[in-house]
Figure 1: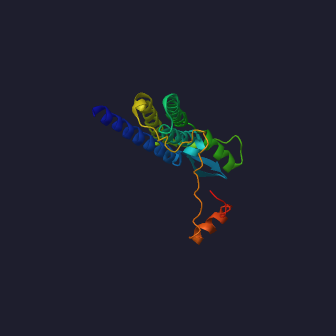
Figure 2: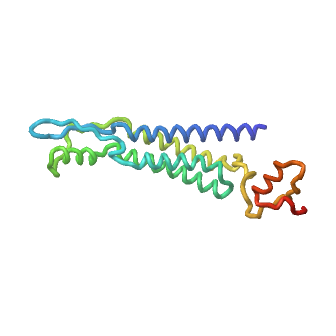
Figure 3: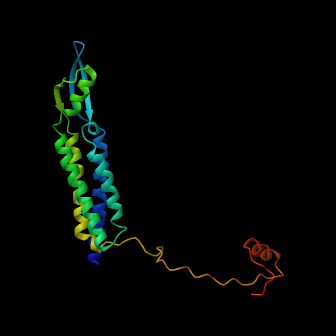
Length: 200
């Protein structure tokens, strides 16, 4: 009983951590990560770089992690271990990409060059927000979900194989001859391409 309860708790924790982590990573990727100004025609133009401008890795890995979290319940044994490792790798990759992008100015420099028409232009008054660290926290949640799946996944239930085909042909059921007293059965037999006058 305790083992079953522990299994349910670990499933619930992994699902919660994975779902929140993926959602937070996607949200953080759409937020402003850096602000700055570019000198344009003697004035200052404020510019903003979103997470997706800096790096697309957290958003992409969040989707991969979410798919891996669902796939954990669709596979068994070795497959479950591999999917759990993929979930952990998605989390670790998200953390690394977010931390590398936290102090990045390349995206704003590119915007400054485009706005000013000068390829050598750089951004001024550079400042960063906390969203890259939110993305890193999201990656950590995905990593923890993968760790739970790897540690406790063996005791988790898998999707039922009840509807899976084993490749063997489905046996045909013997059809009984239509009742001549019931015209609707004769018509149904004709629709199926059968000869209702033939003896069964």
